[in-house]
Length: 406
Length: 110
Image 1 (cartoon, rainbow over the protein chains, first blue to last red):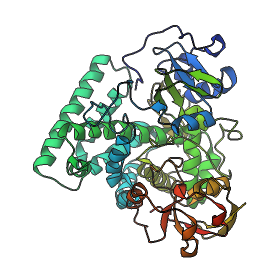
Image 2 (spheres, one colour):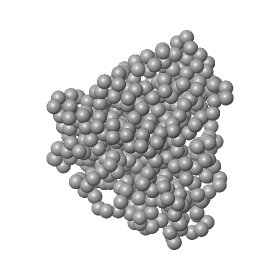
Image 3 (cartoon, rainbow over the protein chains, first blue to last red):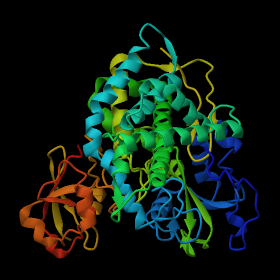
Image 4 (cartoon, one colour):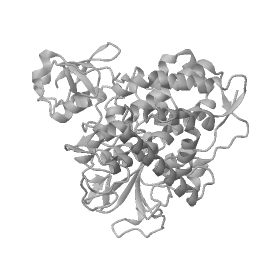
């Protein structure tokens, strides 16, 4: 998905940007990213300054080092999640609350999401995730190939999400197609993307109306019954939050599953080891997530600040590459290798700071349970000979297909 | 430097250094106590009181060494099934000399 769909212009750097810090790298469509995103972003550690200014996408900083990304994410007073410098309050228009909110409002809304995303809530979803995983994997019985993304990596998280929202899971293909189109998959046109966004909007509208009339125990009903500062959430705010859940909760788990399987398909030793030691899968997921991190996070600079020797000014835009930061050789040895024997796997694949992923527990649980059931039922899988992945760039780096054989 | 004792989710007791001025969460992380091998994520928000994943139990005898709980910390602890009278978020526990000898147990996530 595009980070700044409204701003694709190439601009000259502002006067406070020194020439030696200018390095062009178009996060939306650089040919290097589309060829191999993990290679492209980690090559920046070698080829570009730690923090550089790219003239693409309206002109912005790009941050690639673990320590710099962490210090920015831990300093939300200076690095705002808002898209404009205008002061905001509870009545302000938000696109994806609480993602685009700042303190103190952000935390009040985040706590509402935790009502259904905290470990206590997610724990009850364990049997459902396991059943969905088993059902999807069992469909591969008697075959020797699959297109992993359409057959497994999309249906599992989409159906889980639909369960949380208490939606009819038999409709999952419709949702999967919308999210794929919005995220920029395939050869979809801007018109198709707009159409999908409007369809999602209409569906959320319908869903909210339905739950207002007949509340249940699902996420939408929970939000509709919630208050911030003793004021019940407006229908508009609930819709905005549903939209965030839809965008943040679906494509990301799909990406994680597909990048993990792509890595395992070329590393049979890891498949052997985790099949023999399923108790190591949980730790392995953390190391996989570090290696395959795929999200870019934007921030708006609200006051002049120096980061790692770089002068940033109020109004600058910063993009932090969680992919590059999680594979920073200054933080971790041989980062591009999934090493299951590391003492720890420090990473920011789920980001850090107040805006770190609120769905992390659900995401990890889906990944762990899926891998447990996959390795139990499947022989070692490989990439289909001649398979060349097609990637998507932007805020989430994704693959379009993953052809596996066994 | 104050010495802290931490019982991991695997049941192992470890003695770790606690730098004065830092938090117990940072001390646990510095000591590479990596409990993700069993479950959960440790301190994903980095200590800004936003995630509730650095939940520990503080031994009764060690409680007095740390400040009182603010409502925001309590809100987050309410999100856990594992909350007890000893529950604290370790990112909110500032280490002072008084913390020497304190005992903690890392709470289960689920």
